[in-house]
Image (cartoon, rainbow, N blue to C red; front, top):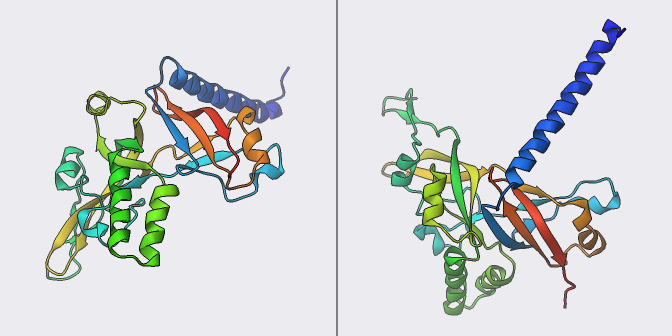
Length: 264
């Protein structure tokens, strides 16, 4: 007979087992059938952790996804590299309306009129583009500017865009997965992922301006299987590598293959 004192322990064990079964079931569903997309990424798009993960064989290794947005026209001349939180021309008021994202007024702080707060993060589908038109435009603008303004900072920006900066850009968002895939059919260049977009009114000298920005992607870290870690564990930190990343039925990524190469 099981003592009543054992029930808490047994319940805890059962919960752990159930959680693992649910997680494993999700992985199986995600990876069943053909991938929704398969992207080839490098160390430019997948960042190693800052800590010394390789000091222990029991330490998990996750690569952080480095994505960008193409900066809006007004920011391009200022040399913006278009990282998370920056504005982008495609994420305008019309797109926010299409996504059902609104910013509601709140009680005014003074007699001048209503005060506005930012919206809650809205769950949407984001389109990631690897080494496509958005990246090439960004690189070409940086290098064109460096050619017309031959100072060290502009040259460094051109070199960074050409050899180091991430080529993975968020280029669109929507709510209908099938519609997005019809619009972006090349599954080797475009991946659909779950993410969040937020909007806010930003005061200017003359008005309140509605802006939207990509808050993040739902899965921004990808675990490296133990069987693929050897090359990274034994190589210097800045060793180049290439990873083939697939996204499955649940739009969750996993690493299909990973290879490293020595630097020349």
